[in-house]
Image 1 (cartoon, rainbow, N blue to C red):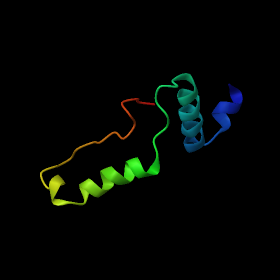
Image 2 (cartoon, helix red, strand yellow):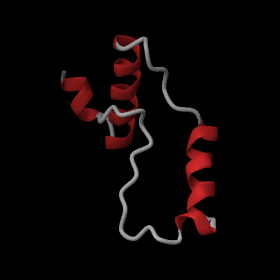
Image 3 (tube, rainbow, N blue to C red):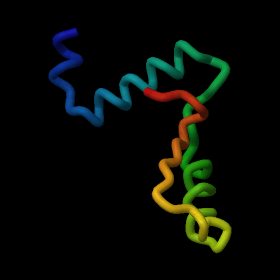
Length: 63
């Protein structure tokens, strides 16, 4: 555990994601193209009515 606390926050999050992915084999980690699809939609007129939305692109899993 002590080694965990020495890691920077971003490295710790990556480590947590990898551990979660190993424990939940039904959902693989998201891919860059999946994030790109959301970004694309946000840049179109389709998203013109969104205001202050928080969009989680994580397959429903909060880490």
